[in-house]
Amino acid sequence: MEIKKNMTKKNILNGLLIAFVLLILFVPSAKALLMQGLMQLGLFRPEVNTEKTTIATDLSSIKFKDAKGNVVSLAALKGKVVFLNFWATWCPPCLAEMPSVNKLHQQFAADKEVVFLMVDADSNFEKAQAYMDRKKYKMPVFIAAGDIPDVIFKGSLPTTVVLDKMGRISYNEAGAANYASQKFIDFIYQLKALKQ
Image (tube, rainbow, N blue to C red; front, side):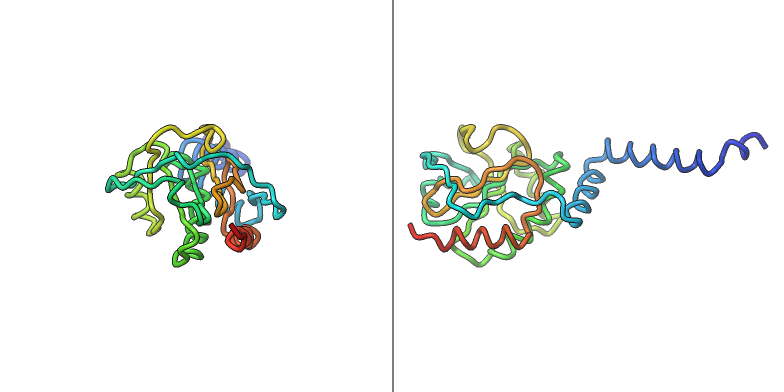
């Protein structure tokens, strides 16, 4: 009888709330799911400036390697818009934004003027590719093949950088964002339209 008295609605609700908070704190996929829901509500929008605000710096020596050992340099990608995303499988904000990055990738998958480089910060191709396969994402996984300057990546995950066709930084933000928004898609199209 004592137990039934203690199990009031208030106690049950408090217990559920505590369980929810613990789930969000200790289960990365639960935190990512919550953040995805918040993205759908319109939070975590990437701030893009449609005016010319590119940062000119020589990034041509930066290189990335894929799982087969193929190396691609940013110098070789000049003339293309480059979407560069630093992420990790253990990072809830990275996982939260990944569906929107995948939608953006699908939007430009057949476009030879837009290149996606999904850079695994842990340099663990097997784990990163297993995540992509499990989610049925077709985005290419790379690791850094050398030092990455702070102007590109300061260590915060996720970090997304977009380079224009001249290799200049047009967008550089740390933190999760909804990259499938029409505003961001329009931003990519604007970068494609720029003359070299």
